[in-house]
Image (tube, rainbow, N blue to C red; front, side, top):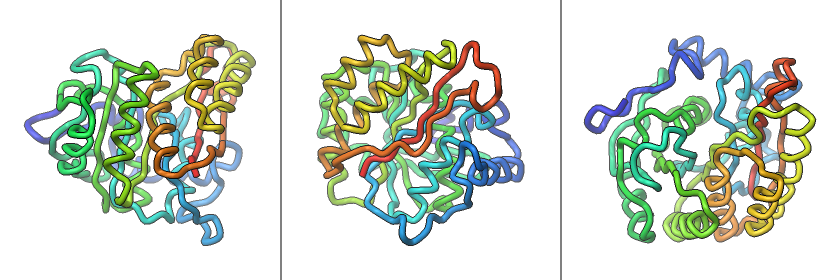
Length: 284
């Protein structure tokens, strides 16, 4: 919960360990995982350094999606960024439709992360739809679970602008993405869309639907993305977050997406009846 300007962890001990040493070890296991992770600890190799504008990262419990998530953080670990704009879906429907926070500290077992008040205000000024609302962020896990990975690769030397959304339509996502691009154009910023993909369908169906949606993401085609999302009835929870980051990345100069890893909870855990899909994607 948020107390004043301090947001204590809402899902430590649930989605990831509440003990700092156990959390650190689980993150390293995720990076070292051979089947679904990058198979190496960061930083990434010199030759793999490139301009990465943003990533799509899952937000399930680390035992399910941590290895998949580690791929994106491995690739960005050699980047020179000191600000992060992160967007995810509001799972509880509390607070305003599109919400950030004006200032404060977010805590995890690995330490504290400061909100970038100036950048948050700038994005809000460039947009008519972004509000300041701490309540909207108080319970949700989608952004919180990204922080320990970021803290691992950047040693807490960064600030964040957390944005959580209920409104996920194309017009809203496009406007938010453009506002983010206009506000971060001259900054060393990493953009993060936090989303899982298909929810609670058979494994083969999840692979089929998510593969089609990911193709649209990789082409940075927002219209096709929404067309496929609606036609296949894909239950990706953070589709608007993905579309917002696609828009911002493209505005900033990205020309394509690259799928680093896709897997479902069934692939990872073995139960293929009702799975959730996870993808790690970068925009370059």
